[in-house]
Length: 127
Image (cartoon, one colour):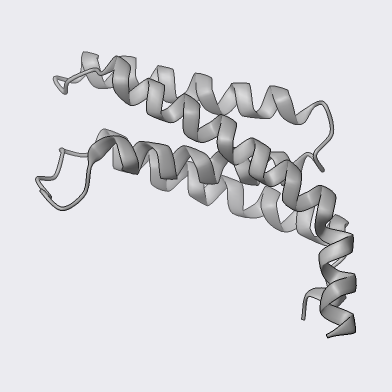
């Protein structure tokens, strides 16, 4: 399966998937907060922005320009936190810290995945 996917196809898929992911995250941050004691809020922020950081990095084909994509994701998180404060929800600097760490870690993971993808495909072909 993976052997048929080129890195260009992965980049296009990441770009296409990035936008619905942004929409879901914006919706999630703007809706009324849920009360789920089993899930730590900061972990949700980290995971969401990890995904965005990884997708945008792969979409930019792990080029230096992907740094700007990750910074845009971090900026999106900051803007959403400010908007939350204007709509009566609590604005949290710790949420933005989790967003930032998630975006950076996701960007690094996306870079590693995209960079090592040809080797991964070769290993899968051999096995």
